[in-house]
Amino acid sequence: MKYLKYVDVVQSMFPDQPPYQWTVNASAPWTPIVKPLAESAVAMISSSGVYRKDQVPFKPDKNDLSFREIPADTATGDLAISHDYYDHRDAEQDVNCVFPIERLRELAAEGFIGGLTPFHLTFMGRVFRKTQFLDEMIPAMLARIEAMKADLVLLVPA
Amino acid sequence: MGLIARALEEKGIPTVSLSSAYDLTTLVKPPRTFFVNYPLGHTSGKPFDRANQTAILKDALGGAAGIAAPGAIVTLPYAWDDPFWLAGA
Image (tube, rainbow over all chains, first blue to last red; front, side, top):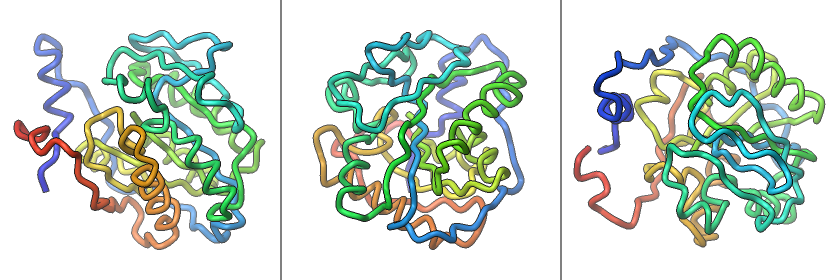
């Protein structure tokens, strides 16, 4: 299979910088999926930089450690994208490319999934402050996901 | 994003990830990943292609429980329309 090697792509974008230290894990943590999908409340987390137009946009360059809560019933016309480091021209026209909220609503309506949590979470990637990301931002997002009693979380990077 | 998936699973909440960056996903190892070989900005499907977007979500959400090995990456069978986008890969 042919695919782009983003380790190389990122390095070529910043030739004067030392190589980015990607996290390397030897194994993955695991929680079994026991609840049937048709009974599961699904939450989505997207690093697309999508926000609701009445919310504060993300800092589009880097190190924005905030996240937005997007109500599950938000109309796609009320969403916008603030992110300078991926080509979101298509997603500007159809946000479902990176934040498939309309498709998830349809899957809930047809009973493929049990439902959606009241909010989905979005943030802007390119966070280079790993300690703050791990110790502050991730726990804050987890707390919201736990409070909404999500049975399964769908992660959509952009 | 993989770090968030890992943190959720450590807390007892199951996850399923989409990815369009195979190499990065291999390094970070989220618990369950479905690989969409599209240019960044289209991880959950082609614009205005409802069938494609729905298929990706159904594959990932519906296939999540069938993954038995932590860290597995399942490649989805969808190709980007421009065959030359991977010419430099």
